[in-house]
Image: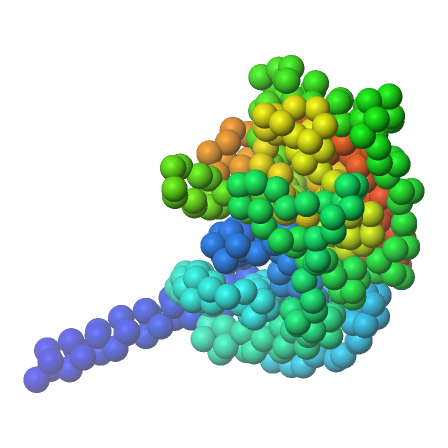
Length: 451
């Protein structure tokens, strides 16, 4: 009987010890860097590719979850300044932060909930979330803290989701489709899929910081002409000649920055899609890589992804505003008609008008924002495309990467030079506007911390 009682006490002590180990009060170091949010973003990228969202829509799907994750970082650290009251229509609210909260987990919970609300394949995101939360819980965070943290994250997410619902996106799903014109200077659907024009009303989506979609209206494209002595013909001929004489390096650059989620392959009578990352997804990948390279903690990572998301989102709005104003013919259509009917671009032409280059606009908008955050020079290894069968590329600054992304569209046979040059200028202006309108630091507190 005595031995039985001793065994009972021993079992009780062991059980108590297991509980103590599982619910460890010293849990603050479970999440220190941005690796969990980066993993969530990679998963979101995979879902965006799986669901085949267009580049503009993808920028929306990246931006809102990143904003939600950042708003939790604001609650965790008074040095950070809320985007509420700074972004168009993002009204300030007070969140309930009572009780013991593990803010890195709350930030992650906010990200997952908003991301899941914006996609089709919700189960793909939920499965990833459950795996991440199970891992975090197993590292010793007390159950009460765990649940309270999720509660706060979902509260923040609900506010961001409500904000997203007022950006005119859902209304725009019922807007009329683009009607193709027979005018010789206008965009025509291109082979092999001859897809309709994507997101012709994207300029009606509420921007984050731009006063209007046309705030940085670009000069009109070169006047259309089929005359061999005209400037427009020369610009098309430049595309034709360049693509006929590409170096291996130039081909590699074009392929690296292709980022066309609509690439369609044709073999005999079979047509199938090749799934790729979007241009915005590529730059969100660069943002995550840069945060890790700089050794940022989870709060700094959230800031980086949120600011990059805002810049990309507004960049697409500004770019698409011009695309469907000028509705300019693509090089593939023009060259086949007036120069060489057998010519094919290195890259498949995306299904929307030519002017201005989306890569040029959004890459430069993101580059200006990231340069403000990390400075220049800043060496980073861009491994974003490795998962899609392409090698890494290295850059010494974000502006260098943006310049390469822009010129890649000439190498690919996708754009004339004015769309690239003027698009880059537009993107820089959008980036500077974002930085002029949005502040993520409470400067006085930051100065105190430095002292």
